Length: 208
Length: 104
Image (cartoon, rainbow over all chains, first blue to last red; front, side, top):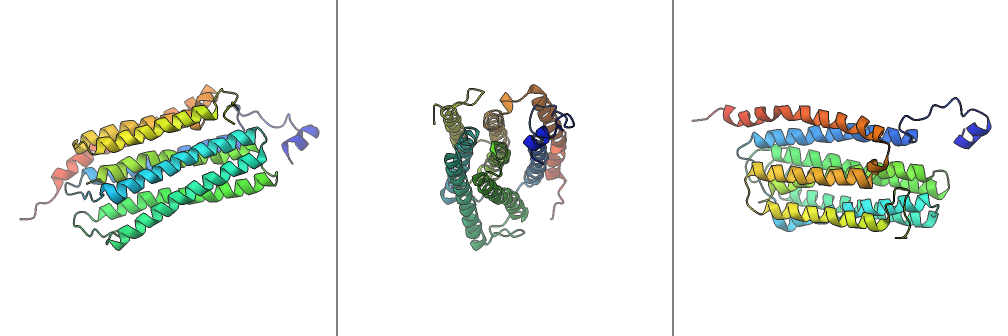
């Protein structure tokens, strides 16, 4: 039953008010974000642990193309957070077409980020980098930490693009509302925030 | 569209300004990377700036600043506690370097 149908049936007293004054799906996504944040924190911490404990840690990233590519990826992801905010504002004002346009822009930027990332991976693999292979000498754990951390983040980005597409489709058919757009937006901002740690710790700390 | 404001008074213009500020912080991080600091100092600077960026994004982009304080106090201290406890293992990492077997 929808919320309005439940109210008409006199069931509103059965539902308890959220202690935080927010919809349950919003609280749910916040709790998920909290757990995912701890996951990423532990992965980044493990990377920092092995990096600090390895005196011969490799620092292979040149400014061009790697760091420059990382900067473009950061720009894409930060801009996608901005477009996501545009989508939410449009959804709250019941402007369906504008909301869908902003969601489309967000998905496009997310896809651009993923494409740049995969291109970088392919280039590194071409140079001999693997999960447990270091072509320039030094710890093989460099490849393990780099590919697993960036791979975990890339998985979240791709999942986010899929979720945005699903919400956009249902919002277009009026089966989802601004609350759903806000929920997926919170996830998308979280993915962006994770990158704000991944880029400096994994890329900039390993710059030549 | 820029004139449309949310109930908390944030407009797209405010979000664009915050976005620009975050990009500036990224620029500062890249600049500091090529200043030839020691690894420990660079790590400290980058972590500080990353935390600033994350705080700004959580408070404004994710609107946590405009939610009820009870939500903030339920989420953030728990996260900070976990991160704090995780950081107790750094001395082990620093000792690890000196525990390696020396091959003659």
